[in-house]
Structures are given as C-alpha cells and as structure tokens.
Image 1: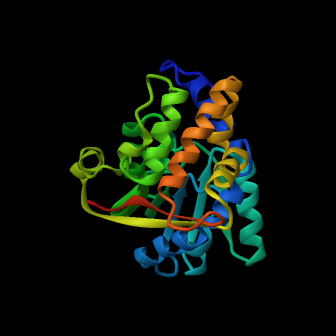
Image 2 (image 1 turned 135 degrees about the horizontal axis):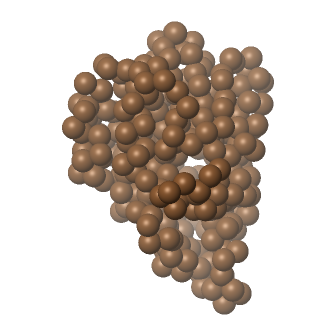
Image 3 (image 1 turned 120 degrees about the vertical axis):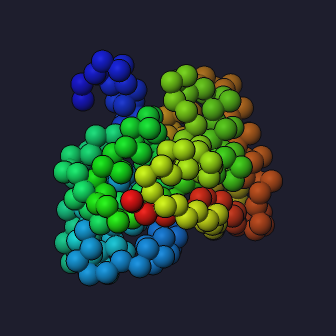
Length: 271
C-alpha cells in the first residue's frame, strides 16, 4: 500500500495490521443476531446488488446473501475475508469477497443498489473520503445503510477510555462521530434523504466483566495492539479502567456480563 502524498500510507498499514491481529471472528460470533436484524430492516429483494464495506467475517454479507441478493463484501484484512468465505461456503452462498479499502472502493460509479457498513467504514481515518466513496458507488435512488457506535454509548465510551491511555494519531477523528446525527447529516445529508434511529446491541457473555476485558484483549485486534503499545504499568492501568467500565454497565451478575451497547442506524436514500 503506497504512502501517497497525503501521508496516510503508514497509518493505513498500522490500521490494517491492527484488524488482522487477534481473531475478530470470535468477537463477531457474539454479534451475529444484530447483523441479521440490521439486514432484515433493509428489506432486500432477490437480485439486489449489495456492497458490504468493511465486511469483516461476514455478519452482514451472509444474511444479505440468504435473501437472494447479489452480494459483494470488501475488507482490508485478508484473514477476516477468509473466515467470511468459509461461512458463505458452509451455507452454499455465492458471495464475492475482495480485499480493499473503504476510502478507495474498486468499483464503478453507481454499481450497487445498496451499500452497507455495520461497525466498519466508521473506522476509516478520513470520513469525508469514505462518505464520498459510499455515495459514488451507490446508484441514484439506492440506499446507503450504516450501523455506527455512538460517542455516549458503551462502545463509544470504551474507545474514549482507550484513547486516554494510548492517544490515536492527531490526524484521526474519533470513529464514533459517525454515531452523531448532526455529523452524519453533514457528511451524507446533502445528497441523500436521511432516516436515523438509535438502536442497541446486546453483549451477553457467559463470564465476568474482567474476563470480558481479557476476551477483547485477546481477540479484538485494535484492543490487542493498543495494549502492546503500553508498558506494564500502562497495561495494568488500562485493564483496570476498562474493567471498571464493563463492571459499571453490567446488567448481569458476577459470572455473566450483559451490556446494552447503543449505535446509530443510518438509512440514506441517494438522490
């Protein structure tokens, strides 16, 4: 991946490496139901041309393909794409999975009827470029659908805790700004008709909050790489703050972690 005149090449390489670290598939397994609900609300029809941007292991691509839609999934992490291919093959679903960048989609303008991204494109470092690309590849009258963590929700707050211990590059805006209605309107509203709703994903893990932190530290690449940037004292401090966060929001008990995580669902109908 070339560095480019904008200086984002090295940053993109680091982001790609962070998503390849750990095993996001273990995280994704626990979010399958919400991905299915996200697809159901789009009401896809057979033959609809769908692009799943930052598709990960296929939590949205797979249920989209079950409707008979013509699905393409794109992600920058080849190991996640390999898991997605295996999931599709297990159900005999024909999905085209391709490695690529949300900021430089390798598709012709207006190719897709529906362009979607759930907890994916929001992490690209240049939101204005992502917005332009989503709009470019979606046909007039088509739909852009996103699921984005909100700043005030559980996951958005977790990102803020992590950023205090290991600040991101100053060029990167918080990903959770994609979960702010006003910001989404600024990024997409000029060329779309927007409908936005707050929804909640339920984390339900059969272990204690401290073990939930350890689970994310082991399997969620960005968390794993963030801990790796810190010395021993820094790692202990981050683990303590994250454990407090998970414990304070836990609706379960000492041996079960149940948390409602807010996100913003965006449906943008392209003019």
